[in-house]
Length: 183
Length: 414
Image 1 (cartoon, each protein chain N blue to C red):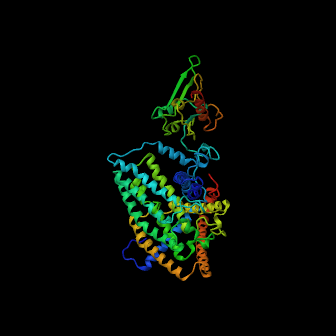
Image 2 (image 1 turned 30 degrees about the horizontal axis):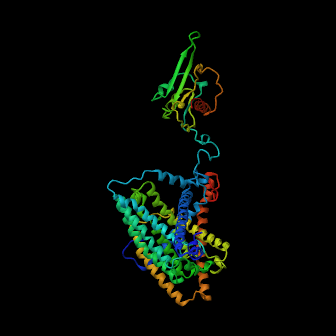
Image 3 (image 1 turned 45 degrees about the vertical axis):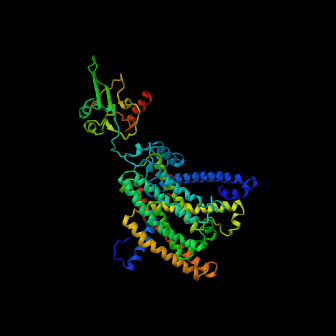
């Protein structure tokens, strides 16, 4: 509607026609949207496959460690700006062999900056696409990739390449074990 | 059930054999029918809010609430419970008494109209001789409540909202009443049942198709009713983006529910009045007025016809809300005083002339009504063609970009 004070009669009827036709056209547009597919992804229960599988390759989810290729160099621990990662390297008193006695990542602290992933020489520490791990006990978020008492021999570049586990499977196992045991 | 008010007054009071008990039965029936209508209004208001949110969702390519209960049907129960459990705050410096009673004015103004709204032949609480006039007058209570709420809140947003609402509702009362006057002219009756009885069951016997003037009067009524009910594009009194929430900014808890309850129930009222006055009400095709109360089957058929027509209009109102942007205050006033008021006067004069020249029952009257109906039908066909056009121009691109079919009709509930 024009708000000019000098309204000619022609303009007056033109205004009415414009208002009526544009309203009709607008209604036709909105009505056609009732027949279109909504773009909403109804996470978590009304989707075809789990969202973790459809997220992009470079998603920064929780960190996991492929201990089979971890060299125990502590580069990730040093790269972490907020001390999320704690690694204990120990030495067998008789054979003088080093082994990883502890590899903990505190997912409650982690801010997903990815500096540890960049620092890792072998790609042992990596992001998964896992993101939904709300819990009522913060201890559940302490992810231990080396169990208590387990002695993991560090990987040496000369060693043959071991079989690697699928991305996300290690972190998922650890999380699920935590939720079962500590709840 | 509540047409009993009339029925019992005539029959039961006599059968109980005492004039003293007549008033008691009348009172009981009045309270019962009030409760039934309150139940209907609240159920409708709740379900309308749910349906509106679902439709709004689909228009915006979303889904809408579908988690609480089957397909989110109990969303309104959850919302209502949440609001009722909230604290009933009264702002510092507010006029406590006025602040507390303001929502009930709005509520009473809304529920009062249900007294004369017929749902079918015989199904009406009170068939007043001044039905339509009564509806126009009692809805004025709503504006009293809104101004009271706006003033008593001691908040500038509420105050602006209340004043805007006063300006808007008082202005739009005029085209509303004038466009209904067209119907009153045609039917020669102010009673809602009388207006419906004067129409016929077939579309070209409805008042809307009587003449081009009556057709325009319907749209003038519709726009004015939108403005009266504070529906978008006339929701200036509670414009969220300008006035926080207008007159209900300071309300919380139960009183807030009452305001919104009145607004949703008003959807039914405005659509029902449009159906009563222009779209033939509960008249069943090929069945005369005398026969329409003869059996329960016909009464229920009329009820169903009335419901379908009213709900179709409700959906149009909901769709309008998600189509049009809000008008500016000066545009709103321009529309009322420069377009709707002169337009409704023209409609009245035109209908009068038409009535003098062409008799309703004559052959030429029928032919002209069918012609107007055909014109309206062409308009509907053009509308459907535009819907299809708007859908088709995006269909292939959608398929190319997503690999999925765009077709997802409303009955397929996500």
